[in-house]
Length: 94
Image: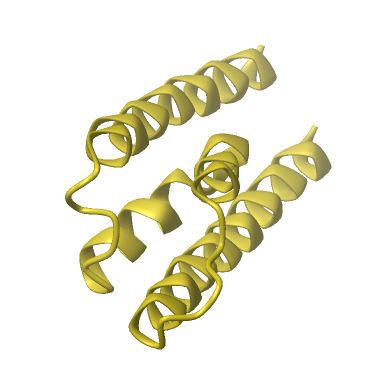
């Protein structure tokens, strides 16, 4: 069971670091008036476990903070992920 928990932690760290970096990259592209990362891609990254990285990216890069889908959607995904991780950890403890 420990291997599964280690895998989950590694996955979440990697996906959140990648998500944070892509939010920063998209902000940089916006400032350069270049072709951007799609909003669907940004939200998908948050949905697959990168909600912490997305939220941090939004705050640190000041990116997508005026879009209601991001302002409310990313924190909702974070809450969902916290609950999901809690359930998985509880089930693994049994």
